[in-house]
Length: 198
Image (cartoon, rainbow, N blue to C red; front, side, top):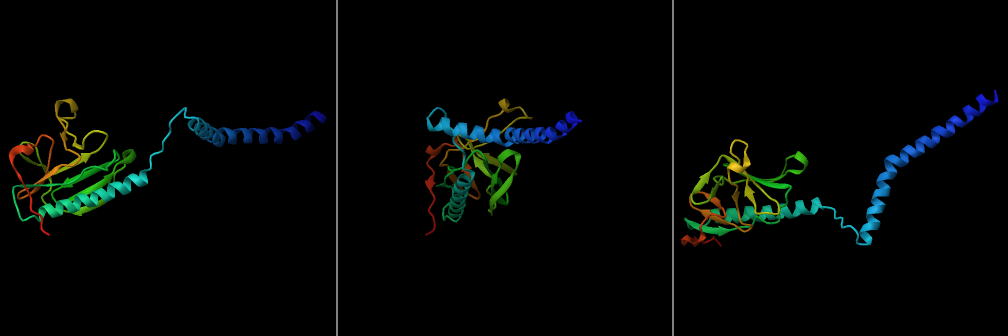
C-alpha cells in the first residue's frame, strides 16, 4: 500500500517536471539562442543585423512616387525624341515594378507573396529602349545588389537569353511613348534633353 501511495504522490511531481522541461525546450531554447547571439555580437564575434522591412518599404514607396512624378513630367514635355532622367534606386530585392499598357505598380514580393504597395495609371509605358524600342504587354523590373533588370528566359532556360538591365539612374526616352532606356541604349546618339513644362 505504501508503494502505491508513494507512486501516486510522486506521479504529479514527475509530470510537473516534464511539463517544465518541455516548456524550457520549446520557449527557452529560443530565449537562450537570442541571449547567446546578443552576447556574441556584443563582443564582436558575430555580426547579426536584422532587416528593417518597414524602412525599406517606406524608401521604396517614396522613390516610386518620385519615379511617377518623373514619368509624368517627361510625358508632359513639350519636346519629342528626347530624354528625361529618373531613378530606380532605393528598391530592395523584395520589390518589383510591374508595368503594363495601362498602369505601373510597386510590388512587395517577399516570401512568395505578391502585394501591391502602390500603383498609378499611366498609358503607353510598357516599353524599353535597347538598340530599338521594344513593346511588351507586361514586364517586371527586379532588384538586387546588381543593376535593376527585366529577367528573360527562353522556354524556362535562363542561360539561353539575356536580361534587360537598367542603370540605377536611367534615361526615359520620350516619343509617342515613354520608354526606359536599357544599359545597351547608346546615349551618345545626340538625343536632346526634354524641355519640361514649368
